Amino acid sequence: MTTTNGSNEAIPTLQLLDPQGNRATTRGTKGYRDRAAALTPEDLRGMYRDMVLTRRFDEEATSLQRQGELALYAPSRGQEAAQVGSAYALRPQDFVFPSYREHGVLQVRGVDPVDRLRFFRGSDHGGWDPNEHNAGVYSVVIGAHTLHATGYAMGVQRDGTPHDKRDGTAVIAYFGDGATSQGDVNEAMVFAAVNNAPVVFFLQNNQWAISEPTIRQTKIPLYQRGAAFGLPSLRVDGNDVLAVYAATQEALERARMGEGPSFIEAYTYRMGAHTTSDDPTRYRTSEQEEEWRGRDPIDRLAAYLRAEGELDEAFEAQVKAAGDEIGAHLRTGVRALDGGAPVSTFDHVYATPHGVVSAERAWYEAYEAGDPPAQQYAIAETTQGGAR
Image: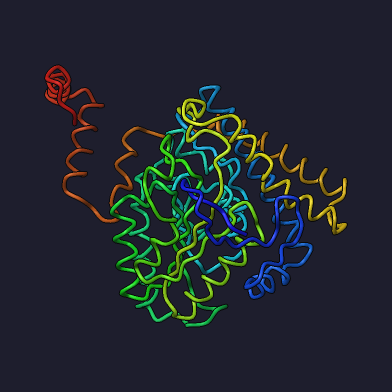
């Protein structure tokens, strides 16, 4: 398969399942086809289930934000194959560094749906224990977490974990096309490359950095940026869950075996808004959106499973029931979230005690207790336009 950039230049793109749900047999893809062929019918149904549940989560979260229950939300509709397919390639010991849209990855890693929305509700700095799921919390500072991922991978490397495709540990960092313009991402790839760190840089190119198209950021296909740092790099059809799985599995195995970092560009499309504060009708056409609806990742896998006799009404009913359970769980759980005492915002800023944070906490506690000097200081800062 080939895709194009803004200049209509043909770009080689790995595809194993076409938009109609047919197996693709492009030359040079046998190794990837073999990886996808190893997936059992149960694996494929599991992928379908997690993709459908991710979309249901997405719909419910968007609805909750519209009802005023969330401060903001970043939809992932259309990117389910990129997220679920890559997450299925992970092993339990691997560690995930998400940005703020990887709801499908967290679905596969077992993070409670309500916990995924604590941050967007404003009731928690993160939402879950990263050690419990080997998945970091959402990162809103664009691209910063790629440095965290590289540092973690370098730590894994120095800890002397096994160089084995099954028992070794790999790290994966998810980010969007806009993040590739950030210095942090480029610095992370420098460190990863020269240290041969076991990390996979997974770019979800949904073609829009908020309202800016990819062609405003680069004149070359984004996967070539990885190659510029010496990373094995590949563009994959991000709406093809089989191709994403196969490409990510290969890259993770290479990392686990001590063969260094890789770069994957999953070429996909954000079918909804950047966040719930965004209006995509201001910068893209309905014709383009309709074209990409025809490449829907869930419909694609469903068509393949039906053709193989692996998707029947009974299973679809089970998945729908599971989606209804997630919806009810979110509506009840999110509305019940309590951020706790405001002073708790100082609890987990740093891993160890920090003088500035301790002083600010003491000031705030005095303010809450009605200490006049603290209150007067706050009023003075407000009237002078200051910010604490």
